[in-house]
Image (cartoon, rainbow over all chains, first blue to last red):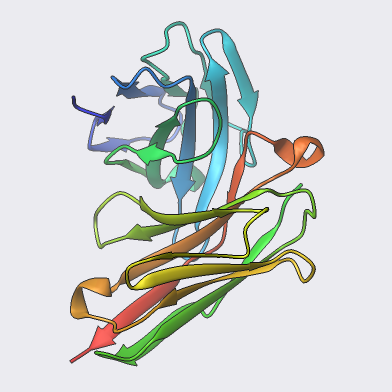
Length: 112
Length: 115
């Protein structure tokens, strides 16, 4: 039981490049979410999903896209990276709602 | 939407002393309040949570209290140990009108337990 996994662990992008951050969970959780963590700003919700085929925006969705084609996977796409997207990104999952969320190990992203 | 404020941003205590971290929230319909601990370079991990129908919850050396009228909740750590040193985040889950499927986090408290 791997829990919540994220790849890559670290990534460097140039401004304007695109990439996908991967997130997977093997706990059969319906709820999955993406947060970004910046110094002094806590964890801010980017997008979330309450089940396969259903996604919604969080607090800071601009510049990010998500999809949820399976229960296990919830990828986060950056269409055109900007330096303001330099951050640590955490994926999390829970059973039926936003409670008792289990976090992945995080992806550190640097946009030059 | 929900707004969560957390204080203090840093807290230094002597080993064995108690530590208290306080949070306020804005959405009176919020009904779930977790606390997460994040050690340096690690992922946040849930350490305790409380629901709006409960005033206090304890788990060994940690406890959380909730005052719904004042819309604030607190984390209490007794007999602090060096391994308690970490960043602690409070959060609130909004009511149906404020986002019943969203957690809003506070900005974190860096707790340092000194020997």
